[in-house]
Length: 378
Image 1 (cartoon, rainbow, N blue to C red):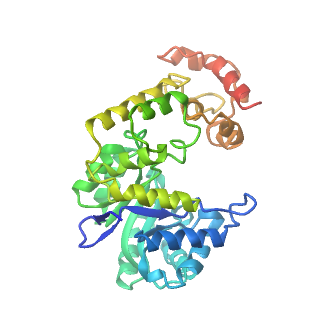
Image 2 (cartoon, rainbow, N blue to C red):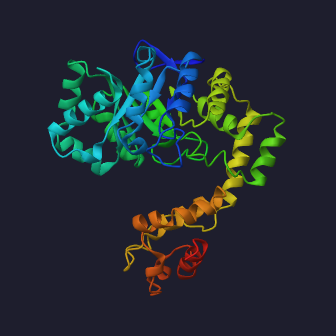
Image 3 (cartoon, rainbow, N blue to C red):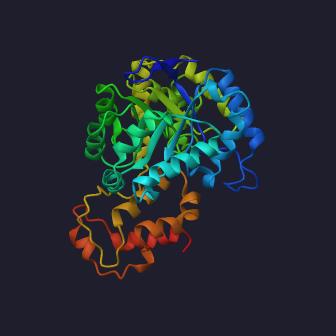
């Protein structure tokens, strides 16, 4: 197993981390984790060099930590760096930090969390944590030994990321990064910014939630096959992330033993700067092929906002484009209610035309609202 130095600290970790957000379940119920299959995967991973395991308070409807605690207590707890995350959205006062950490220690059946993260930070959550004295909590928890290293996971823009990095002497951070997300959220600029400050950088969503490995469009498959390398789409995507020397480790939310074995094999040879120039050019072709699949040429300038019906038009278009790009229109229809709840309902469009008058791209937004409804079967 390839190993990489953990930021400015004098120790290293496995380049592959085991993410416990997508564990195998029974009867498609997220809170019914298949403990036997999960244990088999985790034991195999650890026995073959993986020493970083990542979970969170909320994963699998709050059952991930519970199951992981039972699995690790069978002689594996001291073999791994155990990471979990504070449910930042539940913090209402200073005491809440301690309350939730103590709950997590009990669930995980341990006396310490090796890597403790403030979960899924954005501007609003970060400001709330500051208001509730987050630094006092971190220092206290470090001093009494409940946590060893402090970090944060992140979902917002680059400026917010930099401000959080600069606000405290963090040990590490966790960002979403893959070959399609170089400019998304923290992106490449954030990766390099954190690494330049000697933070360990943990990568989540290297496969973009599975979009880069499932239902691969024919034109993308053809490009990968022309490379002459017999690699799976997952192998290619992981290699792209590990190619960056600023990356400390990559988390993979593995759900099958075969995935664990394949990812461990890839991690052994996916070294920093190991991709050839031809391979890097192949990724540029793949990215271009995906982008050609974009259905709506929206630049997210937001000139169309505010909509009098509270439809967040650019976000809605982004979800629709995502489904077209990654060949997941069935999934779009399945999660349509969630999309509507978050970004507004296209059915509420009154066709006032205000958005079209303001749109620099001259998009036929009223017709596109109808198209989105139809694509979702509404």
